[in-house]
Image (cartoon, rainbow, N blue to C red; front, side, top):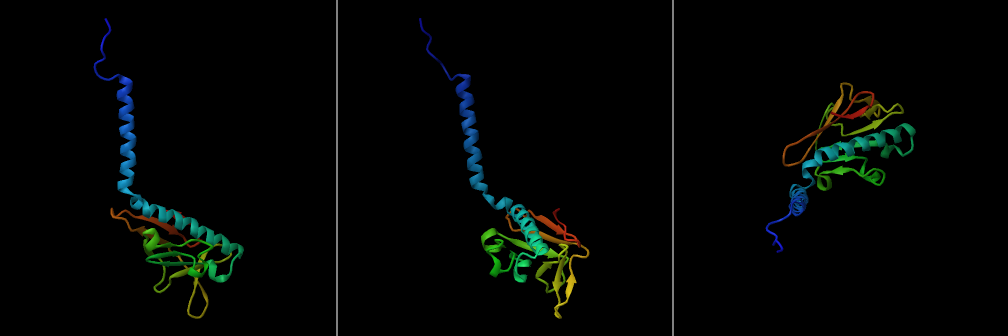
Length: 161
């Protein structure tokens, strides 16, 4: 006499549990979205962008305008006229919220000399060194209030804190 099956086998239960796990992970990432990672993504992109502009300045590859880094609360990157060189981070497209410490008041762009050290041009067009005590760029902009920090020392070394 043949037995009629009652219930599920162990393999069937494991397969169902694995499928439910995969579906829940996919659904959770759709609900959370990328906004929880925005500060870290923006910081990492800013480090790469800063280093790229810095290396281009050290090699004198580009025109003077494209060898500067424009920094404001909702813009980080090369000037708008050079946006094809390095795609800037903006508040509108990258959810950028940036605060900077270590820059003099009114300075919103920095350039790099042949040694990679940051400077700006004062009113008399004289180069003035920047970040003598270090500069900190704090990236925020997500709903959870997380922040990511990029720092630059007076020699131009750029790193994540």
